[in-house]
Image (cartoon, rainbow, N blue to C red; front, top):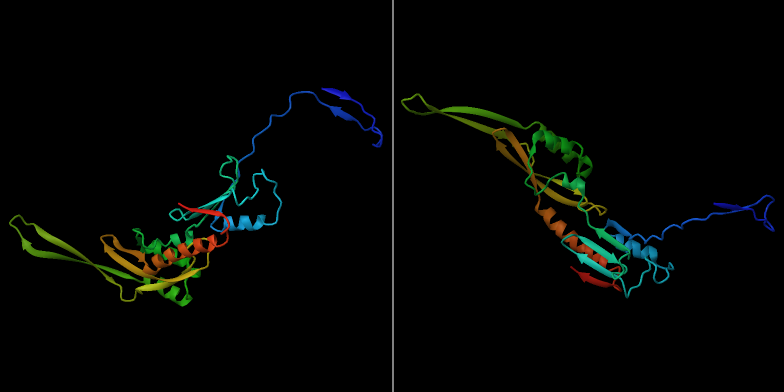
Length: 244
């Protein structure tokens, strides 16, 4: 390193300029920008870039003649490729994500709840009930559910002293409501949807198991999937749009 003192015409007294010799930093390739967000991310990105000046060749320059939008209904996604021929071209991916709060209810799944696990779930789910009184009634009914066991010895015996022992379980489910109403978003970031849920139970050797079913949820999920994608697509009709 060589230090050279330079007098600056208009600089403060004692100013100096340091010149360093050595290998310059290697030029780095740009990093590819991939943005992942909710289903509205592509629309929000394009709206935010409206009116902004990005010189052609810049990685976030929007050219409708180059950009391609891909729609994948199976993956519930919309992808914007600003320059598909450029390896470093910016990509924006918007996905519909199922609401994890709704997923906790395991509706229309094979999962079965014990009484304790269902009570715990419902205890912290009052905000998802359309009616607080209904929430309280459902919760209390499950807590107070009575399961009784009886045993009976069959009259059929053999000469070896063997007898058939039969156990029977019965559930007093008269006070258990057959269904209840939930008010909860199906997809993250979307408005709440109101639908009925059937409360089903099954008696096992270990006691009683509960599971939840809802035909309305199936129909609303399919309807929302189509409506949300259709609404997003209406925002960028000027772009090349391809369905996968």
